[in-house]
Structures are given as C-alpha cells and as structure tokens.
Image (cartoon, rainbow, N blue to C red; front, side, top):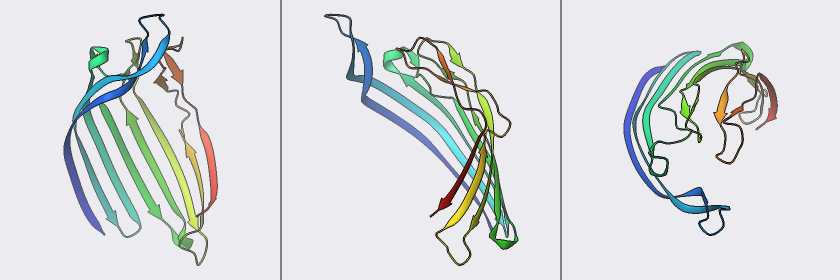
Length: 173
C-alpha cells in the first residue's frame, strides 16, 4: 500500500536529426543529417495502491520546436495524459482499464492532426505456480474511436487513420 508523487522538468537540444530534403542539383529527395529540435516541458505522475486496487495518473505538457520547420515540430503533441486503474481478484485474475489522451499535432503540410482519447481494457492471469508465465487478453481502443497520425512529408495524404478496436490475446512469459 502506498502513495507516490513524481514530477520533473526537461529541456533537450538535439542536433543532426535526419531530414528528408530536396537535392539542389536534381530536385530528388534525399535524407541528410540537418535537423535540430528543442524540447522543453513538465511531466508528473501520481500513483496510489491499496491492497488489490491501484490508480495511476500521469501527464506531460511540452513544447517542441523544429528549426527546419519554422515553429512547432511535426507530430509533437503539447499535451499527453494517462489514467489507469488496476484491480486484482481471487484466483490471481487482474483487470486493468486505462484512458489515454494525445493532444493535437502539427502535420508536415502545416495543418493539425486532432487530439484523441483512447480507452483500453486488459485481463491477465498467471499460470498457477508460476511467476513468469501467464495469459493476457485485451481490447485496445475499446470504444472504436477514430483517430489519426500525421503522414510523412512525401505522402499525398496529410493524415493516416489509425486502427480501430483491436482484440489481443497472449500466453507466455
């Protein structure tokens, strides 16, 4: 049982990022180490656990600037958040529900990919007598939310749709 709070501030200057550029001699696309990015922000997490129940909330606010794009970086959300709850039951069965938020992001064509919320559900059970082996089943994007990522700069589309509801199952360690 316990309560934990954690927070941090960050600042990064990254140089020599790979960028896709038009060659001056023939106009063809080529990758070169030209990019520079600056990121700064705050992140925090709160976690609470009591016997068979746990809650965790985390969030991040950031500003990422791309020198090559004259402003905010592509596919870098200002806001990220996650809220997760876990519950253990008898017979070693546990369930988890989490909700995550990804804020709006700039696209290479200088438009915006909208922010989105996703809800995920997971059930797990270890194999009796084993701490390493178990079964896991889950549903990602429980409510079948439509959401998108920015496309590459060479793609015709500005946004790519991401998968809808997905079921998963796994057995192993």
